[in-house]
Image (tube, rainbow, N blue to C red):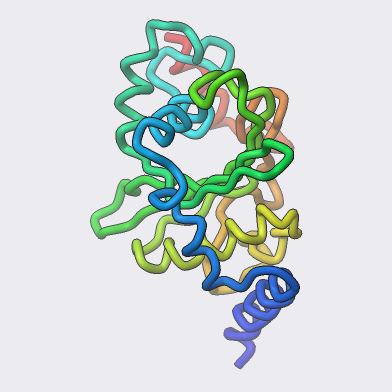
Length: 207
């Protein structure tokens, strides 16, 4: 019984957070395929992939916009898709993008993004934040959970009940967690305390 309690609390939180406006099943109305044409979807992916995608070999967060990495980011962008999308009356964009996870089994993971567009959808965003990155999970499970998180994100709800330290055996969000948060200045995930592997990755990327 105690093992299912965190899941029940999360389900109750999700219901209460959206019960006054939208329910989890309402996420389907925000599917990107219903909101965006192909050109707009590609433009949006171009604007976010330098933050949401992996750094190419030799790149750093300071050099990721250099033209020499364009081909790498184009390849990374092709590995992603936009699943959910909403543009608010005050011109903020909320979206969930996902990609296949590196796994022996069929798994996907998703990122919840809020941004203020630049002069065009493909331009560098004026503001950018990632509210969550999920664990890798089966595609159907990811679609359902990412839809729930998307509605909560766009409603400005507190997502901390879904953090790994709070969600028990039910997996939702991998980042942020007790040690990792998103830095809107560098537009990257950072640790409260530097981790030795982070230094090794930075040195590798500078080679």
